[in-house]
Image (cartoon, rainbow, N blue to C red; front, side, top):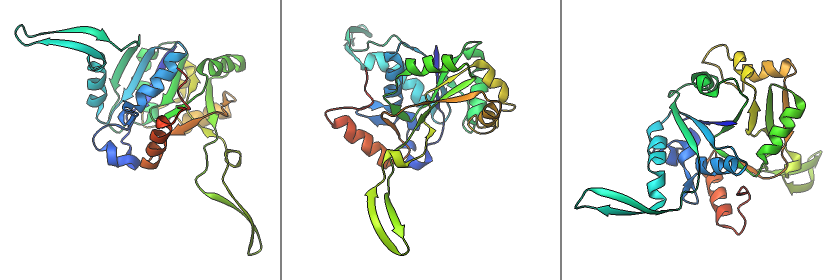
Length: 256
């Protein structure tokens, strides 16, 4: 199945780095978070990627253009003007289509712009700023069992604030917010049937807004509940947390 990744936004809430590069290209452990997401899909056998680029899309194209040589040992012969790769650490058998879907295009519009590449087959869809240890093939299996138009992976993010139990003006207890205290949200890692694109009536729509709402109203939206690790990289605090996890003994999203 093709894997579609949204990677065109400005990333304004992490502007400390996104003024230089698109948010999916911000590095965790020396590699873009986009690479980590792609490694997850590749681990489960999905290697045909469509990157919906926009803001600083040239950075994404240049990174993939240079990927093999940057992951290899190279001999540069200045006399002949040639170069020769003598050993490579690049093991991926990826096909990567980086498509400029526009600077200010909404997610619905980005999908319409790549519709010709998706074709008439179901596809995988996620965001270029969130990692997880979700079993992609289990999500696909669940999607097929439900026979719905769209399956969303639902996650419960860890809370950042403590919970107060209050009676009157007295605090009876205090504890850190647990995942169980949070509601379910759309964590990405979706499976989408091609007819879902028919719900996008114009390119100014957010796919997550009216199209998904209407799909839900038609009884065609279901969720795969993921209770494992999930983390988006929305702010510098998120990036720092992911970096700390990467440097730990166990990288929770690394299943490959």
